[in-house]
Length: 165
Image (cartoon, rainbow, N blue to C red):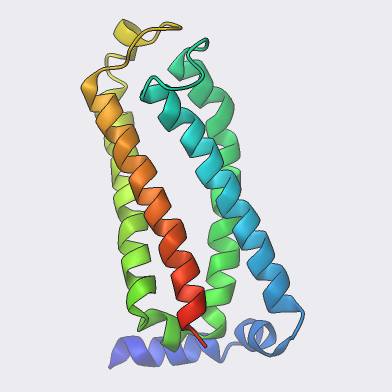
């Protein structure tokens, strides 16, 4: 199959071999990946809890997003880079791991949910975005989906790590 050949090629690249064969490098990359994911999920949770009306009620959602989202994107970039490095070290096994596959689907769902919220949910943000105001049901639904998706991504990521050996 074409995909399997591409995966085999990927894991035989010099950087993938270095990551796979170095006893110190992979754990360091994995540690940075975990820290980046913590920052991603933590910053997203801050916004989601505000949208749910549970926390940070003394600040507008728009301001909170403006302050927090740059950290989310920076951490997501670090997580994507480190995750790609780990993936490349054993691409054929990761690609065929059911938990990893579901994790990628959940990442896509989280991304689509975020895109839908930013495209549609923020259209009338001026109407409901005052400190102490209650966001509309659509914003709360997006926040709930986001929290559940990210909890699932983290769980599946841990599960993937335990099923790879």
